[in-house]
Length: 201
Ligand SMILES: Cc1cc2nc3c(=O)[nH]c(=O)nc-3n(C[C@H](O)[C@H](O)[C@H](O)COP(=O)(O)O)c2cc1C
Image (cartoon, rainbow, N blue to C red; front, side, top):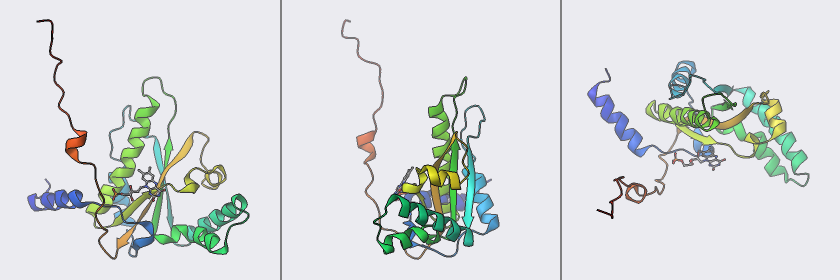
């Protein structure tokens, strides 16, 4: 049973949860045990038909630089006039955080489970990772940026033709608490349904 005070902590943390910009994420990142916990909780989502239409590709240490080199080369190909500082930024993209997890969606036509529902499950995985990371005291941001949608980068990730990137989730710590972000007012988004009045009676 989740101890009462931990539950209050959890609600308080979730009530203030914020993404931390990748550029503001620092060491330390989650170690192997925490990462396993975050991804295990991440994948504990409603999943109609038990299809599990996702997988994770983790980037740590030098793999972040190796992938950054591929991003930089592709960026140069796409932007022949690119400024050197922008190419350097591509090379350093993944080193913004100690750990980056690419969440890959494998959504396919299914006899009973609409693709929309499969996509929603993968989105829930990404959000669950943010929530688990936040409760474990880590900073996180869910990004796609340009490279989530690029066919050459998809090749470097060795995605199957049915797969696509749902997001790159940057994980680490925050030196400072991020500023609050404007949220939609609940009252503007909430109605209570009631049966239409029958005007004939
Ligand atoms: C699927 C998805 C992709 C996103 N991609 C980007 C992105 O490429 N660049 C960006 O600045 N924010 C992106 N965001 C937004 C941030 O992850 C995040 O929503 C924003 O920083 C505020 O987050 P918070 O409400 O958790 O504080 C994306 C969000 C989602 C759901």
